[in-house]
Amino acid sequence: MKWKIDKQTAVQNLMDLLAADGPSGNEGPVADVVKQKLLRAGCKPEWMRHTGLKRLSNEFTIGNLVVKIPGTVKAPRLMFSAHLDTVPICRGAVPVKKGNRIVPQGKTGLGGDNRASVAAIVTMAQTVLQNNLPHPPITLLFTVGEENGLHGAKAFEPADGGNPAMCFNLDGSGERGGVIGALGAIRWEATVRGKSVHAAVNPEGGVSSVIIAANAIAWLKANGWFGRINKGSCKGTANVGTLSGGEADNQVMDYLRVTGECRSHNPASLQKISKVWKTAFEKAARSLKNNQGECGAVEFYTASDYRGFRLKTSEPVVKRFLRAAPEAGRKAYTEIISAGLDANILNEKGIPTITFDAGNFHAHDLNEYVAIPRYLEACTLTAVLATAE
Ligand SMILES: [Zn+2]
Image (cartoon, rainbow, N blue to C red; front, side, top):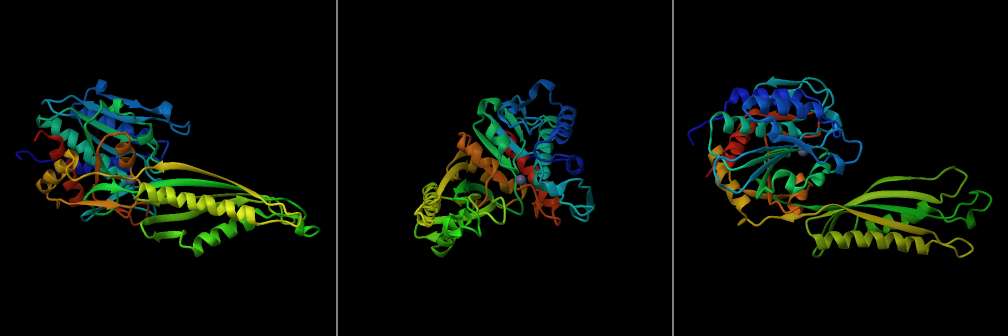
């Protein structure tokens, strides 16, 4: 390759983006920094727009930022995506350079998840436009609300991005290969209803919703369905996240809301795990009776958070990544991870999407940092991927 990224500009992009505010739902300030930089690099205002706000809940102030750069060569449209939002621990982060790293100055996270990725995509666009590198049509997708539930990706329609043939998503923490698979998750909510009576005058007449939930959860734990699940071909995890209910100490608890999640790489396992949980709660409700032979009831709702996916190594997006990685000084390998990403949603929407890291480490943590050499590799890799082959 005859061009090089401008390292100084790349690091400046990162510093500017890390300094901008952007908690989930309030990504306006960071989107503004992205737009300013792209305009200065030669993007036209009409290439940029925010989309999907109507499909987002009203806690969101902006929709996804979508930038469509016309191609200079005829080839399938490529998309590059990164989420704009950061987790609450990054509030007020002040980035400082320390040796080969960017670290937070005070006791905050850094927000390198996912500003390193946003900065790498911005650097790619500057590199491609300012060096007039031949390139297919390119879509940049900067999503909102990834951290609190992949909301921006869910609100994205492929047509908003010009129906790209494939997508390179930049995200994550730590050194990774190309992520070609990630697990699926189901969130569930159990509403447990018992019978309320005075806890001291007539305890025998009560049906306690907390006992129903406790019996269900204890059974699930004792039988290997809580925490890490490894039951023959059924593998995954399950967790109880919150409990809330009850009204008074002298009243048998007649209402309890329990929420949690199940995850698995395998969709059949995921269905199986959530079904076992539902059945356990229902059984526990039927078997706890008061002195009148009355029992409680459970309503168990599940919602698919995101589906798992697995790309074949023969997919063009995977092949393109594996060819480009060594040119940027990265090892060419793929892996499968145990977390949900915007890529889960984009793959579900029919855009084959691979994910790689932009040099961020210890995300969601006070020790978060960006390793500058790894970040610069990601900038080069993104530009290699974007230019014509
Ligand atoms: Zn992230």
